[in-house]
Image (cartoon, rainbow, N blue to C red; front, side, top):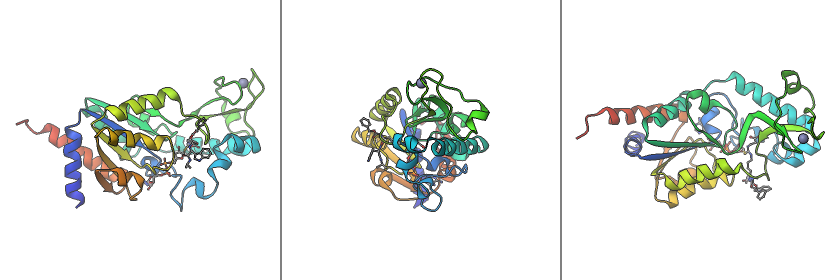
Length: 255
Ligand code: BV8
Ligand code: ZN
């Protein structure tokens, strides 16, 4: 079953003109970055999203939120891209057009060699003032302090440049991803819980456009329901095998 699904998926990807890649926390799971929804280890299982990743949560306890992001940033700096990230970067190099959009705020796709990644929910290693929006580069000392730094321009708190619940996604990144979803002939979804909007709507745009949709996830969630080919398993295992088969097809003499 899995073998012929992999064969079908590889054939579709090898023939693709434009691939829209869409990843969620699951693609970083095998690097050791905890996912949000995965009950036993998910971050939200200990805290509610609204409590931490929101203006209300930050206003209620800026120190708590600041320290939570500082911890996550420190742990992301100790982990490495896994074979799934590396396979996606190889696939991008093989494909005429490949747009990768991620919900993740880590830089593991870039460190694996992926280019022009659209970060739909921002990036944890960048900071700006919550009041006036001015960019801010905290020192290591400020990053490990108990409270966020104060903006020198307006006196408000500095925060990580990630998208909190109730906040708009960066327009340029989202529009670029939506254009790719509407133009692609194949959408490859990896490790996306499919619960957080409007990001989760992007694979639906690809489907509506008639693209072939491939999902890689150990669970059979909303994205598997949308997919034409749902590969049930971990991205770090299935992606390298999938891309190896794509490379084989590409290397075979054309008829
Ligand atoms: C917006 C950055 C509107 C921060 C994140 C009430 C109030 C306010 C808003 C809402 C509300 N109700 C609903 C909403 C909309 C809300 C939303 O969708 N909520 C959900 C919970 C229902 N969305 C928003 O608020 C968005 N903004 O709507 O603004 C607006 C309109 C007008 C004017 C102003 C505003 C903003 C959403 C962005 C929130 N920020 N991240 C941070 O990271 O701290 S979201 C955060 O959670 C992540 O970034 C990620 O996107 C999301 C979790 O999703 P996944 O990445 O999919 O991760 P998850 O754990 O869920 O799933 C992992 C998957 O991997 C699983 O399927 C698992 O099976 C799989 N997996 C596990 N291991 C592996 C694997 N797959 C492959 N291989 C493996 N090894
Ligand atoms: Zn400011």
